[in-house]
Image 1 (cartoon, one colour):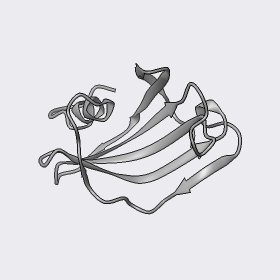
Image 2 (cartoon, one colour):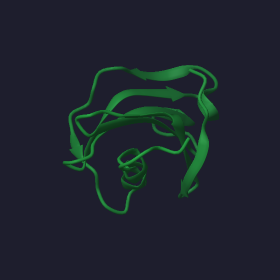
Image 3 (tube, one colour):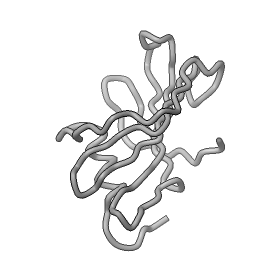
Length: 114
């Protein structure tokens, strides 16, 4: 996957990027977008970056992951250690989180500026 990652935020040494070119808004008010987290140190699963395909239910303020891929290096480099392609269950988007800020972009009404 050749992504056009752009910086989104930084939290506790972890950097979050999103790929605005992957943003899709459906008529049913669901949106999908790819996001990537580069971790400052390896996670419990020994990954340094995780790419997530997130789907937002814009009207109900909830989300689920459509795919999650974890890599041993930052920016999706090295071996793929996590390969989850099963949709997760819906969960509520919590206020004050990075995911909430991504939702605000993904669920923006009107024409998208790319």
